[in-house]
Every structure is written in structure tokens, then in C-alpha cells.
Image (tube, rainbow, N blue to C red; front, side):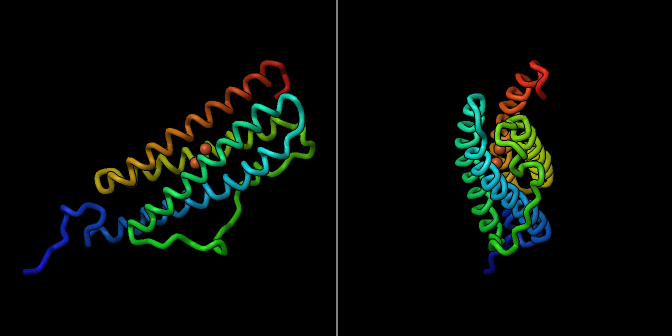
Length: 170
Ligand SMILES: [Fe+2]
Ligand SMILES: [Fe+2]
């Protein structure tokens, strides 16, 4: 008697191979976004100067660990869906907006860069959640939790920006 791996197997079912590959591609992009964010936040949690930079520095230093955790979750899920986590030679940087500013006291530049990075993550993760709907609940559940983190990150940095805007410095 043969075992038929059918619809009851969800995203791991034979007939969902194409969908699985689509999700692995989306997860791979998410993985690279997290990896680049780790690099950018490591630099941005060290470079800024000034008394008012401290809060931003501490937030970003904590976020580095969270974003790294996200990258690890994406990597694990890629493997579970029979994909392969890519090697570093496939990496292509995209975060032009998170390069170090001209002057290291330019905290507004860093805050705006973080908001842009978080917004990009929020947009992409919403896409993944939609792509998973009805077919891959586990990935969907995982990405919803990560999306929650990113929404929290963006809101925090929007709050920092508000303070500078209120003073006419942003
Ligand atoms: Fe993240
Ligand atoms: Fe984030």
C-alpha cells in the first residue's frame, strides 16, 4: 500500500510544490532584508555622536539581536520548505538610505533610514502573509509575529522623529 501525500499535507504536499517554491523565494528575500538590517543597525548603533543619540543607539543595539533572530527564523523556515539558505556571495545590498550620514550628529538621518527599512520589511512581510493564506499556516503565523515586531520598531522610531519635527529640526 502506498502512502499518498495529498492535500491533507498542506504546504508540504506534492501538489503544492510550485506554491512552496514561491514562498521559499519570498522568504529568501526576507532573509536578506534582515541580514542587511543587522549590518546597518550594527553600524548605526555605534556611529552616532551626541547626548541625544544615546536613546537611538540603545534601541538599535537591541534591535540588532531581534533582527538577527528574524533572519534565523526565516532561514529555518526556508529549510523546512525544502529550500536552501543562500550563501553570502548571493547577497546584494539595497539600503542606500541607511548609509552613515555626512556628520555623525545627524540623528534625524538615522531615524529616517530606520523608518524606511522597517516600512520595506512591513510591506514585504504583508505580501508573504497574503501569499501563505489558505495554504501555509505555519509560515503565515511566523511572519505575522515578525511583522508585529517590525510595526513596533517603526512606531518607536516615528516617535523619535516626532520629537525632532516638533522642534523644527526634521
Ligand atoms: Fe526584522
Ligand atoms: Fe525591525
